[in-house]
Amino acid sequence: MARKRRRDLTMEEQLARGPVDLPFLMLVLLLTGIGLVMVFSASYATAYYDSRVARNDPTYYFVRQAIFAVAGFAAMYIMSKINYQSLRGLSFFVLALAFICLLLVFTPLGFGGDSTGAQRWIRLGPINFQPSEIAKLGIILFFAARLSKRESRKPMRLKARSLLSGPVAVLERLGFWELVPYLLILGAVAALVLIEPHMSGTILILAAGAAVLFAAGVKLYWFIIGGGATAIGLWMVITGTEYMTKRVEIWKNPWTTEYDGYQTVQSLYAIGSGGLLGLGLGKSRQKFLYLPEPENDFIFAVLCEELGLVGAIVVLLLFALLIIRGYWIAIHARDRFGSLLVVGFTTLLAVQVFLNIAVVTNLMPTTGISLPFFSSGGTALLIQLFEMGIILSVSRQIPAPKQG
Image (cartoon, rainbow, N blue to C red; front, side, top):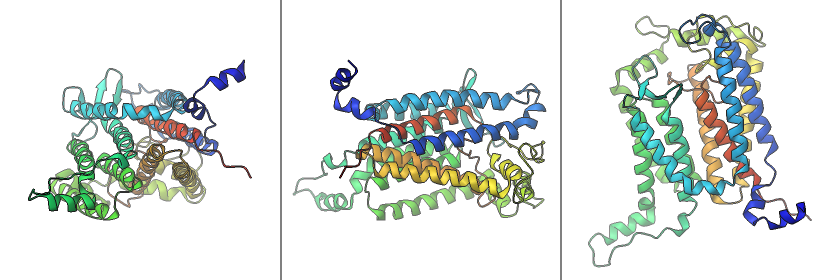
């Protein structure tokens, strides 16, 4: 009977039931597990002395993160069992939901996320989340779904007698008209995130969209032009915004008395005091109300202090292996849609890890960006694991190597 049911399955269903990529799965589970341990260690003192939110419960952040991790694993498992082709039709609705949520940030549902008064969060009862997380997912899904069918696109042409037929044809050959809808969508989403303001979220959304466009075969010169224009635009925003200018000044000299570089200085103290092997798991000194956000954006500093250079290198190596394996899955994916999905999510992960480490080590100004699988933040972890489930779904349909 079991064999008969197997034969009755369609080809699509049989492909979707292949084995997941075990190396990728194990790396995700390992990083999430280490992240949970570090959240417990880094947040212990903060939660213990917090009578308002944590109610002096030292396990508050750990328990909350663990609950979302379990939910995330369930979402990852379910998504890995679903044929990722079904995401084609949902991509538009996810992108539309992202737009709606980004607009809702500026309504009474939205509230600030830091001392600058930024509107980055939406509160729905006990659940708080950043719409920028949904925006990243929506951009990757929509771009991958559309660009996977770019060969079927009809080129733009005008009648030969039209005065604009020549310029339109030139721009068509250069690939400009194909890019217009993607640039408009990416620009609109990035602009909404930027005015929250949320610079790191803007950078991640632009990076995710650019990665999918690049993997789809868009000409390199458009990235040179677009990258230059984006860099100039972001620099103008940074220099024209008071709090961003202040962060640049702190980055240049965190020990100055004119600006408050306290968080960066404490982060560097934590990293430096860890030495080669660290002070030992749970023995960080900076987490005892010296380092702000030890369980969130600056959790890597606590990791360096407790596990030392060796522990930090091991964690970075695990991230590197996960990213490399992600690109391997993208290269061997069954179709272009799956490949573009994996490239988008893997690049998003890589850029986020780099930016967080760069901020913690003062390689770049503070941007308020979390470390995937580590930083405390339930909805972010849930979405990240859901994205990993999509990659695992793609890995199920990798064609088996030919024998002989």
